[in-house]
Length: 186
Ligand SMILES: [Mg+2]
Image 1 (spheres, rainbow, N blue to C red):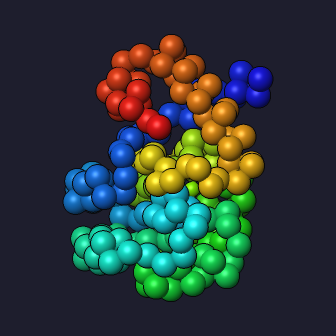
Image 2 (image 1 turned 90 degrees about the vertical axis):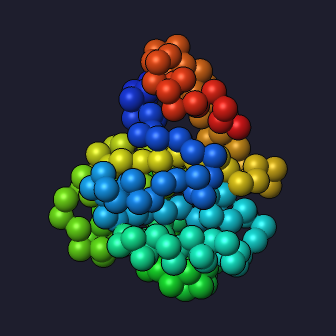
């Protein structure tokens, strides 16, 4: 199984929340984070929607008021990500090829950030968002997928590896696992 060859440490998020609405952005800012790289599909909207909700637009307004720079970062194709990001008033990197480093590096460069310690990734997938962030030393907050039943085949495959990785983390780092409440992850 592929997950046996991967270091569990690279799949351990710094924090886990049910949704983006459960993240305390002010605390994150106080903690020294100033830039957010945020995934789209199943983090901000499900695959079968293309427009941000009023609630999400309000949240992004609040996040910007706190003083964060935001970059949308997605493996999905440009037309979808561009249209969505424009509605949120954020720059974006589409076809980011997460978990490869290329898209993350591009996003950080576009934001003009030198210090990787000031960056936090937010996403719903351990195999792309968490693994990608950890490979280049970024902080990452894992959230639950909004709607799992219409995920594509490669995402479903990633979910199977994710499930086994969660079991491994639970066995290797039980204290961390319960502190982050990863047991609740869907
Ligand atoms: Mg996603």
